[in-house]
Length: 352
Ligand code: AHG
Ligand code: MN
Ligand code: MN
Image (cartoon, rainbow, N blue to C red; front, side, top):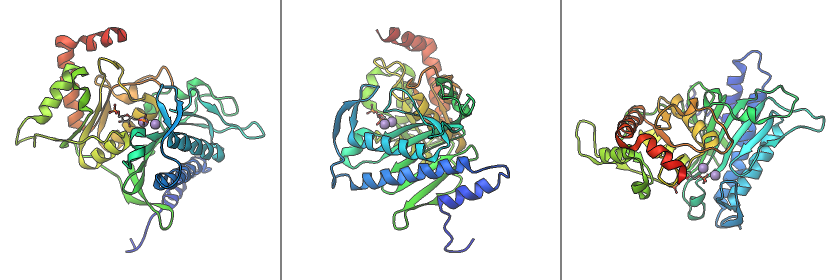
C-alpha cells in the first residue's frame, strides 16, 4: 500500500460491488445515499448552537417522547436521501408511527426496506455530547412492484443485509457491516469524505467496562443487580473491578465498548418490563455489528437477532458487547430468575 493511500467509503463500496459479477449496483447506490444523509446531518450537528437547531420541537413521537428539532431534521433528511436513491420500497423510523412507501412517477419501487433511528441519544443533543444515527437494511419479502407490507419489516435480525451507525462524536464515523466483518470510516471534513480508518474491527472477548443507567438500580431484576456487584468486586485474575462508563447515547456507548471491550446493558425494569430500546432499529442493527465483530447480543434469554418481531416499535431488554461478559450476565439472569424473579415476576405482573 502506498504511504499516502486513502480508501474513501465510495471507493470501498465500489471495490466490493465489483467482486460480485452479477451486481447491478443497487445496494452500493443505497449505501452512497446513507453516506450523503450522514454528511448532511453531521453538518447540522456541528453547527448546533450557532443556528436555531437546538431545543424541543413541541411535539411527541409514537413512543410519547418529546421530539427535538434535530430528531426531525435527521428524520427528514434520511427519508429524502433514501427515497432519492430509488432502491428502497419503504422506510420505517422511530419518529414515524407507520412505515412510509416509496415509488417513482412510473409506480416502480425497489427491493429493499430501510429502518432507522435517525437521531439516537436525543437527550444529549443540547449539551454537545455524542449522538448517532442507526440503520438496518433488509431485502423485502413481498414482490418488487407491489406495495411493501408490514411483513417486509417484521423479519428477524438474522435476515439483515446490512446494518450500521453514524457517530457524531469528537470526529464523525460511519461504522457498518454487510455480514462480512465490521469496518469503520472517519469523516475527513476537509475533503467531505468518509475514509477507511478502522478495518475489520474485532471486539475483545473480555472487557473492563460496564455501561448501564445505575439510577434505575432498584428496579432491575436480581440477575442484573448481582452482575453489577460482580463488576464492582475486586479480583486480580479477571481485572475487576471494571470501570463504569455511561453516556446515555446507545451509539456512543456501544462504539466505545466495541473498540475497548465492555458490556452495554439496558435491562427490563419494574416499570418497563420490556426494556426501553427498540428491537427493529436500535437493537437488531447493533446486535448484527456486535456479532460481526466477535461479540454478542441477547435479551437476557436468547440471541437478539433470533427474536421474531411482532410490531414495528417493539422494545426489548438489551445486553450487548464482549462475548464473555454477555454470557456472564445471561447466566446470572437465568440463575436468579429460577430462584425468585420467575420471568421477572411474570413480566412485572404484566405492567401492573
Ligand atoms: P433516542 O434518543 O433515540 O430516543 O434513544 C435514547 C436511548 C439510547 O440512546 C440510550 O442508550 C438510552 O436511551 C438512554 O436511556 P436512559 O436515559 O434511560 O439511560
Ligand atoms: Mn435511540
Ligand atoms: Mn432517536
